[in-house]
Image (cartoon, rainbow, N blue to C red; front, side, top):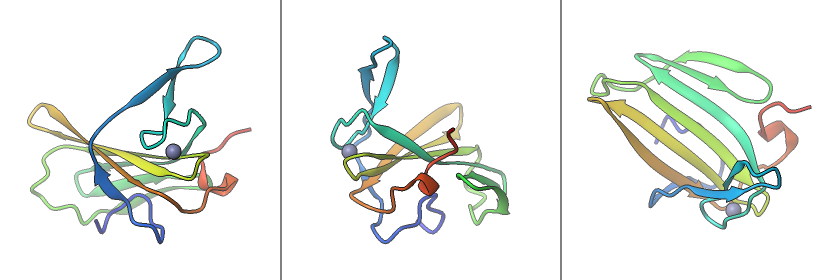
Length: 122
Ligand SMILES: [Zn+2]
């Protein structure tokens, strides 16, 4: 857990993996909160770990840093963090290994939810 893409007082905990999709007003698919189903979901952070490098994209910056990820991981890891307007934070983590994509869902019930805690928008 030392490489959590989201670092807040409320710790993310693993939950059964699920994707909740709704139909938006324009008939396109929309991602909903996997905890409560709220369709008002904001993207907070994207992180990609490749080899010994981790790239983290947040609202104000894109940071490339060394990762402590061990050599036991043989493929890239992708983390997508979001929050919903009902107060849940959640993160999908995908790790590629031996030709398969392993998926995890983590969530917590709180944390900052402001415009600085979401990816850029106009
Ligand atoms: Zn929610």
